[in-house]
Image (cartoon, rainbow, N blue to C red; front, side):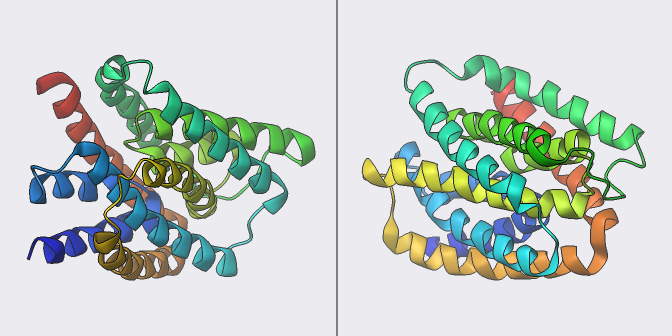
Length: 252
């Protein structure tokens, strides 16, 4: 029964994550509620083991239907991978408590900017080319990759926002690009957790299947309804992230 509940949460997480990121908002709290006596590191590792499959599946589906700027995204994936490893190493040395308290305010600023700029991310007009685009994209990958390894909540949403704001992508192309970088950061974290023995592979097998099914549905809706739909889901997910991270960082 516990594994069934975890699979259902994983499917919902895959659905949300495929559209705009933020699936961890659903799956991680569910994992902690379903398995309250399990070590947190094991739940985090198992979460990554399930989530990476849905994210990778969404990446593949988007790549078939959306024109991606591979010349910029390939080095950004490598930067995100390196950043995630560095963040995971840093969290063993430095407390994330300060970032935990600041996060809801950062997310609130992102939400306010997105809501006020009603035209933000509705048209796809990349503003960088060549080496300049590679540099900006890689910087995004490195910084947010480090954040994902160090702390994590909202990683996909931060990727989407920065692709829209800094690179001029619409929300659909930003979400598609974010999936590639998020796959890299998830892969780095999963490798670290697996090396330390913090993954329940029997649970991953079931949860990953559910995550991919949810991802399939979310990807189809995003591709069908376009940038406006993704923007609406982005606003909803970031709003929920503000509530969740605000409670975790300022109330608990």
